[in-house]
Length: 147
Image 1 (spheres, rainbow, N blue to C red):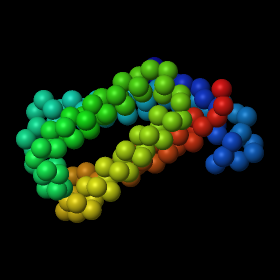
Image 2 (spheres, helix red, strand yellow):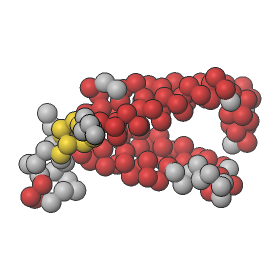
Image 3 (tube, rainbow, N blue to C red):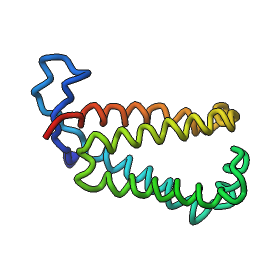
C-alpha cells in the first residue's frame, strides 16, 4: 500500500503543550483534497443540477426573489474559491481556514435557525458540519504561526 502524501507544518504556539511546540506535524494531503472536493462540489453541483431547489431553500429562509439568484451565485462562487485555494500554497495560511470556519458556522446558524427541520433530517446535513468545523478549527490552529 502506498503511503499518503503529507504536508509538514509547525504547530501553533497555542493549543499544544510545550513538548510539541517545536515539532513539525505531518498532515496527510488527503485531508486537504477532501475539503477541496467538498467545497468544489458544493459550489458546482447546485448550479448545474439543483438550482431551483437551492433557490427554493433561499426563499424559505426569507430571501426575496430579487436577491435569491445573486446570493445563490455568490455562495457558489465562494465555495469554488475555497476549493481552489485549498489546492494552492494558500492552504498553509491560517486565514484561509479561519474564513472557511466562519462561513460554515454562518451557513449552519442561518439554516439551523431558518430551517430547523434540517436538524432532524435523516441524512443530518447540519450535524455533518460539526466534524467539518472541528477539522477547520484544527487546520486553523495548526497553520497559525509566523513564517
